[in-house]
Length: 440
Image (tube, rainbow, N blue to C red; front, side):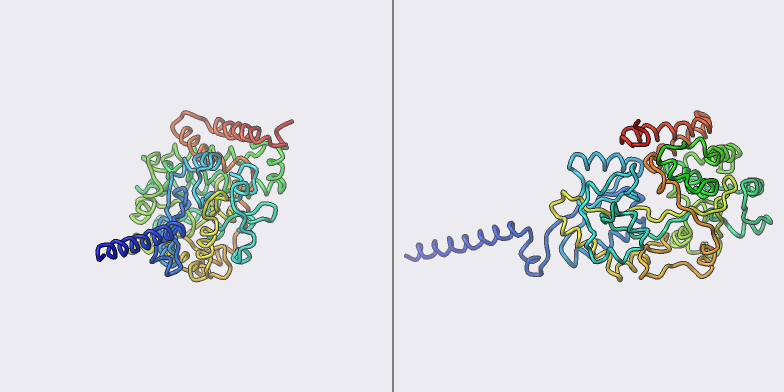
């Protein structure tokens, strides 16, 4: 009898335990997490290298989100040069991550068309709090598909004010003045410019961040290019700048080893005063100072507008990259929770504080890190939208253009070859997209 009772009790306990296991699996959460109202879910987050801050602040915020909700974020980061093609393949094959980081704007015909692949976010509370220009960069037909954080991107030449002062130099405003500055610095034994060609994107900035030159000649040129009414060979500034880059490289202004330079080493090159200038955002000074506090980059580095072909306007990119939710994800609601978490004012502030190279967010409620001097400088400048956010089939070939410029530097291509190749790729991409301007 005792054996029978004991056996019955054992079976009862086993049944209870089995029921507990079944309940745990069915709720997609463990028992402890369920008691705390947390979920045992992992969201995959796919991005290219430059899509996430190098400081790791987004990963830090993700850990806080996991502690609060139980939802884990698994970051999957790919090289910049491979990301655009890789994510397009994954999206088309139905194997894309739950959250996807890609460059904006998504309204261009040559974009990845995230509106086709993403969950719509128009009704989310935080949408109205983003700046209008940033919101438009993640929207199509007034429907919002993404969330973005950085303020408008503007690239300048940052320069060592002490080096310029010692050599009696002033910030150049024309290309000839820039060449004179470079030659004087080179003659003093310092490399004038740190150019990072191995990353593929950096050397392309002078070509398309100077769209103000194009617009000064013809305010409608972006629209005409998108309608295929004119081509890039009708814009003399582009070939002029490609030629000027070639001249500066061959003159040694980028140094002897510039073809092996990586952007990751730019901070060291500037902080050790091995190089006097580099193209970067104003916030790059904070990034340098975080790694090299003795250099006092925010004090020692001035800025001037890139003077290629006598350019006077700073290029403005209203939004650089954004996060989107894969509409085919099993966890769309959990991903929305993560976006809502990132958009909380206290977490926006953490992001700004935790990203040294970032000076401002596209969220007006968060005060920028620009000093009064920086803001006065920015307010004094003429601004123009950059080419890559305004003209189709430019941003989509950005990394290829970087390779073209490298080929030019090694003598394998001429400046005219580079221009011709950019135009040919535009035509190929437009025809592939069946763009009305190209398909007759």
